[in-house]
Image (cartoon, rainbow, N blue to C red; front, side, top):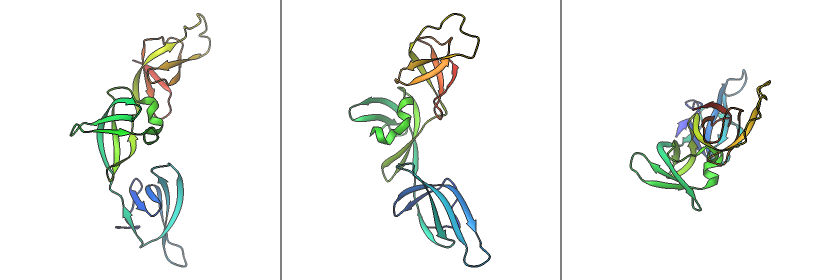
Length: 185
């Protein structure tokens, strides 16, 4: 248990309705009455953001989140397979547990997996991922008057808007936060 006076943004709390991460924290001392703590919390399993108010001296349960480096192996009917780089144990995550990160998972990619009580609660992706272009339409010669782009398909099936000079077989770097093209590798 931890007092609401001691919590900080980024901490994880185990409340009655689930597991939450603190986004914002504000300690309020009104002129009249008792002090209270206002928090903006993000539910870790659904991503829902809520505002909660607690008494200033109220105790809440701090969640223990363990993060371990895992290597992505492959995807099949069971889900996404990862190998722990410390003990070489393998885990399988369902597509709903991986979420939007599935579009960026290429074989051999090292990711961080957050675990709570032996249950995976999230995948921490690197800022950028390198992918091969599997399909790209040829660029039209002379169509460079503006900063024109074209859609290409990557090895994961993701469609990315890239400059006209990118061709099939090229390797590109994509930002995992926005899904935008960064550079050709």
